[in-house]
Length: 130
Image (tube, rainbow, N blue to C red; front, side, top):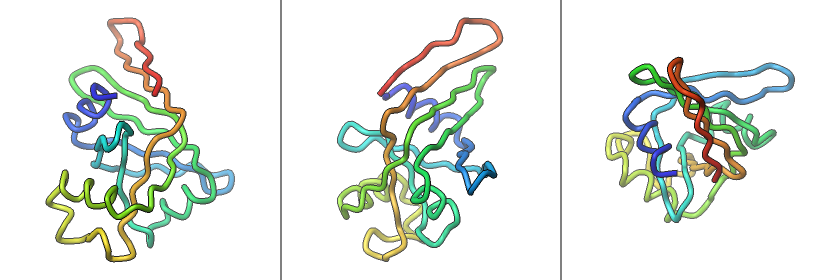
């Protein structure tokens, strides 16, 4: 999982896909943080992505860097603890101008039943489950 988180951080931007009814929705994200042995992302409760994940937690992220790409598939589950939100904000100080752990908007999700696949055009895929 550490390798997955590092790849996402090194790529700086990854794309999160969710579902809204029968329509896929994809948008850029940038947060990836390990807290208590789980891979977390962050968003705001007011955003459509939050509503989509609460309706259907199945999601996939994809990032590309240096000729290699990573896909992570699983369920994104909300962790409503203040400690989880604060840990994310501590890891990403730039977010603190827009979010606070106790603002009623900051939301963190962790991957459950995740499968990460590292791929490239020059080597066989490598699969990691967590």
